[in-house]
Structure formats: structure tokens, C-alpha cells
Image (tube, rainbow, N blue to C red; front, side, top):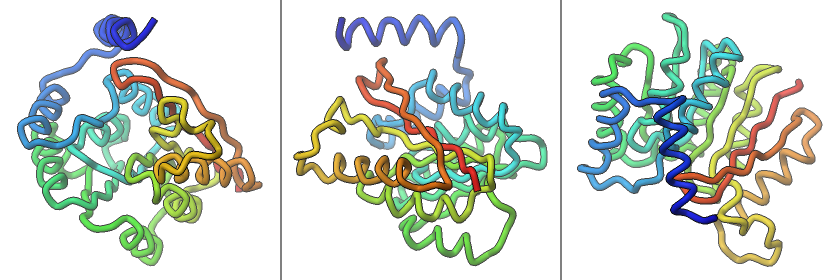
Length: 222
């Protein structure tokens, strides 16, 4: 069993249980045309984020790492009419592509994209003093994950979820001697989740069209 079979199974499950409409497929196509890296969540993973937000009854979602807006569209669709999703994106070009995709999905009033380094925009969010977020999805530079977790804890309500993508790294996360900054970043993130008494968490390993990786899912206790 390997990548070919994982991709085949993902395609079957996606067609059976997930499905993509014109807005989602169009978001992927627009990102490809713009030359964005093909690192968005898969359709099945997007549906998982949607279901988690729905189960939480989320009204406010924070995303760190917009890319082309594919995951933002999935999560925003789980929100009620008065819900709000704030997505932070470092690259102005990525944010421009994502804004177009969000507009075509009819979510302009729901999704807000802020451009800049997340390490700078997250403190600004905290200073604004808005309502806490129900769910946070982190899918950005892996070296920044520990910092993003610190801010997510400040911004998320008790009972909320903090989810981080790409934490298994094809199995490399188990290598304590790795010098890869991406591996070091996710290892530090997971160590923080394990050590912080305000969190309870786990990691779900995944295989599919995106290869071998995994999601960290942590619940905020207090």
C-alpha cells in the first residue's frame, strides 16, 4: 500500500461522502493558475473541519494561513448567518487569490482576510478585545506553530478547539534528532500541547491524496 492506493481511496471517499461544488473546485483551480503551492487541505480534510465547526456550534473561527482560501470556505460554510471567520495570511498575493475565491463562494461578509505576519497580527487581534474564538485552525509556517499556539490559547474560549495541520511530516515528527526546522516546530508545538494543563489533545494520523501526515486536535479546558 502506498501513495497510489491512498489517492485512489481518497478519491472514492471524496466522491461518496464529501463532494465539491463549483466554488470549492474553482478555488483549487484559481490557486493552481496563480501558481500557489498545492498544499491546501484535501476535500475530506476540509469536510472534517466543517463538521468539527458544526459540532462545536462555532460562531467565530480563526485561521492562521489562508493560502488560496479553500479551507476558509469549508469552515465558513459551517457558520451561522451572523458568524465570522478571520483568516491571517502573510503573502499579499495569496490573500488576493483567496479574496477572489471567497467572493465567488458568496462569503464576503463572513470571511475577513488580514495580511501580514501572523506573529504581528495575532497580538493585534488580542488587543481588539473581541469575543473569543470557538475554533482555531493553524496551517502556516511550521516554525511559527509554538508562537501561534500561545496566541490561540489567549484567543479561544474554554471548550473550543485548536487544530494544527501537517504535524506528522511523513513520520519525521518521531525523529528527535531531526534538524529540519519544520519538524522541530511541530515537535515543540506538540510538546506544548502535552505540557499545558489548559489543553487536552491528540493527533490523528492521515493518509490520502496529501500523502502521510496528521492533524493535532486540542480542546481548551480553561
